[in-house]
Length: 155
Image (cartoon, rainbow, N blue to C red; front, side, top):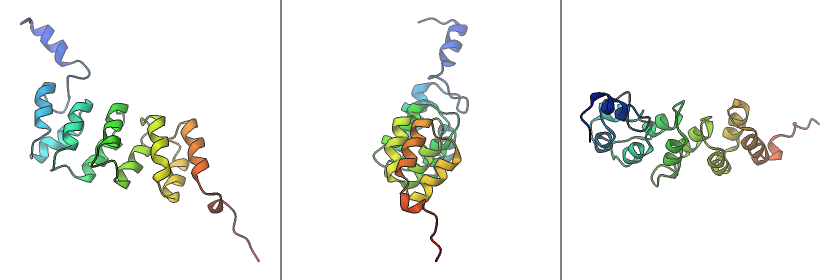
């Protein structure tokens, strides 16, 4: 281990080691993710290390609106969205699923996994939103029920 300040600074500024909103090393941020302090939770929600987010998602003080904020961040890493989508408590929340599908940084496989569980009006809104990749867009179009796309018959 070196005491060179430049070495320490470069290690702390590594992408997975630093959060620009909380000036703490990774281990301290992981510990802080268990805090009841709402101000610190709000700062940690911006963290781009999926390990911090995983611990934060387990925090009993975290609200659904907080999880939606995490899932809607742009830009974000796919690992963050995967962590949210696979979390036992939050993966069944409808608004969380919709938010992940709306995020253009969501991996295609994840979007395709979540799209079938969405209501038709949300599917249509996501299709019209232009955020989906070509593969996900085609898949979403196939999920929209044809009876909802037919023009109304006039008599």
